[in-house]
Length: 361
Image 1 (cartoon, rainbow, N blue to C red):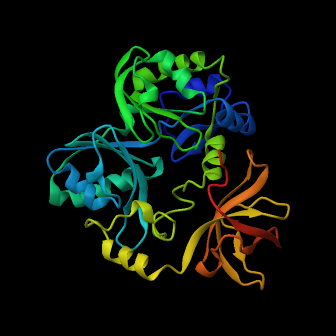
Image 2: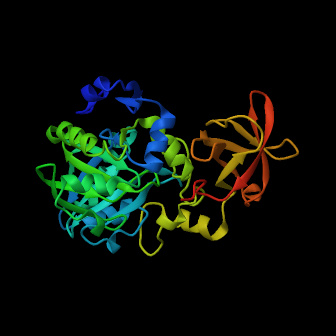
Image 3: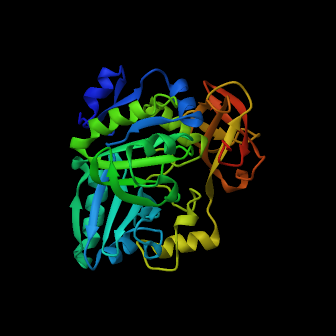
């Protein structure tokens, strides 16, 4: 298993270590519930250094990114971030990612840990035509996600960059904890607000300790992948490998808003046809009305007992104290308020399609 620069710290803090995307990662420290609530109410810090980062630069950088991603990267100004996906050529998704505009001819793509090699090979294949300069810096970069309503006041103690001036999905490059040229990004995967901090591996331990120290009074806790998953699911954020993958289209997944048909991109024609004609299934959010917890792979049924879909993510929501899930259903059953059934341990339990995100601030 690979390790991040912070693995020794996680062990020293009593982190319960598990394998995730080929990395040894902390799933929790003091407990999932405590960490989840800390992020919603105060602040929590995640080590997400397993994520992948690619630099794409040169005169052809934007042309390459425009062709391999679904969103319109030409709209990005330096200092802006965009959520996007890499469509495959069969109607599915290679990966979802963030596109950072560092300058008009330099971009950083942030991809999922489990897809680093796959994404690199996919983009490289198309770059044969464009000839942009590509560099995989994944192993050199640590990434701290500091999330929660009190994060700005905590991190402001460690930087001269005015964090309140950085809008959502924007970033600044500046001094942080004595180190220069650090990316401070107003992004996250929790819906709780906060920053993601990209820094060299040799700065990670010092930054982690400084943030823990700065956040003591505000109740900041180190948080593991368990809380990260419950937080993202409450916001109905898609998780690659669960809710989206090589077999799910962005249109089915409710990601039409990051699929822009104002430009040419991989498999555009097929996805545009799908948008115009509609899809046979849709990703929906549901809450379980009977007692039980939905999990990935559980079957969904209609009232007559006909199979209509599959659960892709599910949990007991710590914030709402109720069981929630995401899943694909036949389009006929995707309307909010529709009664569906989840098979759990041989029983079909009642559920209802609801509006997402599940958690409203």
